[in-house]
Every structure is written in structure tokens, then in C-alpha cells.
Length: 96
Image (cartoon, helix red, strand yellow):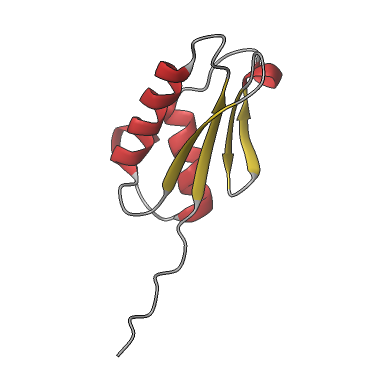
């Protein structure tokens, strides 16, 4: 009997500028998201063009450093992702 494949999980992509040395920041945010949503999302780190630091969920832009003129806080990304994939799920201290 063939196993039915699991449906794909939402994909969070973090596109960062390697020339700016933002890989460490991207990896830290990926870790924070995977700790909060261990079985609910996949995370992709992707080197991009000069100065970029964008976070998307299934292709929809969640955060852009160039637009916000700052880096995202883990709390705001967690809330934004939760609101889209599991709106009723509590986030504990990240909800405060």
C-alpha cells in the first residue's frame, strides 16, 4: 500500500545580502521561527542582491528591510506567520 504524501508546509523564505554579511542574522531568525513552528513551516535561506533582507511566506512579502528601514523583530514575524497559518494558536510571551 502506498503512503499518501503529506501536503506541503508553508514556506518562509529569508532572502539576505551575503555581501552585507547578513547570513548570521537570517540564520538566527530562521532558528527562532523553527523553534516556534517546528512542525508547521519550512524555512529557506536564500542569498540575494545587494542590501536585500526580505521575508516571505509562500511568496507573499511579510517584511522588507528596504521598506521598513530596519530589520524585522522575531516577535513581529512570529505573529505575522501565526496570523496566516494558525490564527487561533497562542504564542505565549510573543503575544504580549
